[in-house]
Image 1 (cartoon, rainbow, N blue to C red):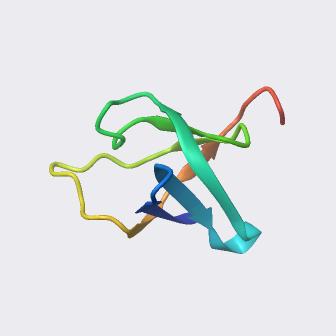
Image 2 (cartoon, rainbow, N blue to C red):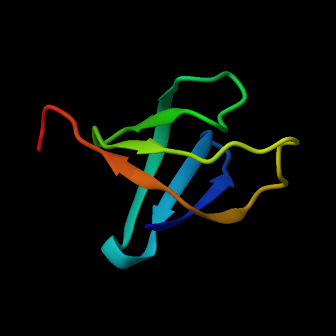
Length: 71
C-alpha cells in the first residue's frame, strides 16, 4: 500500500491515504527506520523498504502491512 512518511513536531508520522489514517511510529526494528518493520500507534506493523541513504522526508513509499495479533 502507498503510505506517506513525514516528520512532525510530535515525531515521525505515517499517513495512509486509502484509509485516511494518520498514526505515529512508536517502535522500529532498525534505528534508521528503513529496511525493517515499524509499529504504529494503532498497533499496525508496516514493512518499510531499505534505502542506501536515508531519503528526505516527507516521502511516499510502498509499504506492506504485516499480520499482527489484532487481525
